[in-house]
Amino acid sequence: MLPAVQRWFAEQVYTPERYERFRAALEQEVRCRIEFRVCECPIFVSQSFRQTLERAAQEIVLQCTTQEYRRLSEEAIPAPYRVPQEPDRPLFSVVDFAVVGEPEGKWGLRLIELQGFPSLFGYQYFYARLAREIYELGEQWGYTFSGLSDEAYWNILQRAILGDHAPEEVVLVDYHPEQQKTRPDFTALERQLGIEAVHIGSLRKQGNRLYRRRCGRWVPIRRIFNRAIVDELEEHKVRLPFRWTEELDVEWAGHPNWYFRMSKFALPYLRHPTVPRAYRLSELSELPEHADGYVLKPLFSFAGKGVILQPTREYLEMIPEAERPFYVLQERVPYAPCVYTPVGMNHVELRVMLVWLPEWEEPCPVMSLARTGRAAMMGVRYNDMPWAGSSGCLFGEEGAEGKL
Image (tube, rainbow, N blue to C red; front, side):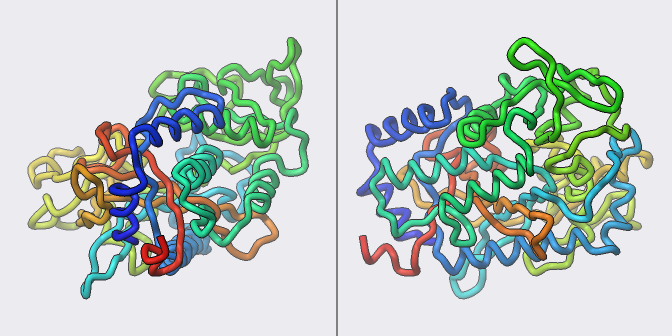
């Protein structure tokens, strides 16, 4: 973390007029209105801390692809949602870290969440690029992981999302994508890759093929970029024209089973310096003495739904035995107040987004996402306040504040 640069930005670079220009340019580039809160500041991160983020994320994803973990995680996939032809690795994955304080004034990382599922690959590119441009920060600040150029970044995404197919043969599916707060990501990907977003319930099945409506006719789908969250489909009782368990003549980018495998389910089984203690509630022979030092998380939920920050022993004891396998108790992480803003010090979560193409030996970190604020949870819905919300990382050399 680079607190001196963060303060310099807030006190000498930022103006309300520049922020409004930035917001307007971002909506123009992604071709859509942004419904969530866009933070006034990017998060400035040193190159050495960037490399720490990359290594930690890669190591955690690799732990989720061992034979032993795949055996353990078989039970994570509900039978009605087990999709055939699962690959042995997630094509897309994300790993979320809280920034914490370490001894001797150093910064450290603690794992908060992980998912074998895509994230905002399109939107975050434009956030970071335009933050650097509109605020006139200079090209010494990079915005990709792994030192990728813009061209290399989009080539990787094109290969991952489109595969060997033309854009019109590939479709992004979600629950009513035009209503999602993540729509700016969909429109950004449509602009860059030509892939359209459609409601998953509007597809048509004929034989073992899926079709979607395009230009007044039904056209076959060769590949699906899946952004549909099972929890949301169940919540809205969406009737699909296919069963997840069917052998369909379609490619998945990425495969739906990894949404379940690489999830909160993995937290108790990971062994890494960044991973706080975590237990499946059903596997605890005795509840911890001070339960309020933990966070209770439903195994399968998104955007922080159902999370209990300081559960009491009484609350945990009231959870029925049959439901306990579906909860994880994770040691509470003490976020560091590490991001200077004019209205107070912010906490921050840094997301590493990775792609793992079939020919690669390990996943490649490609883009960041940041969530910052002063609320107890870091999700954008919990930080609808000035100098908080959705952000991204800019990476610079150690001591970069001295060059400004």
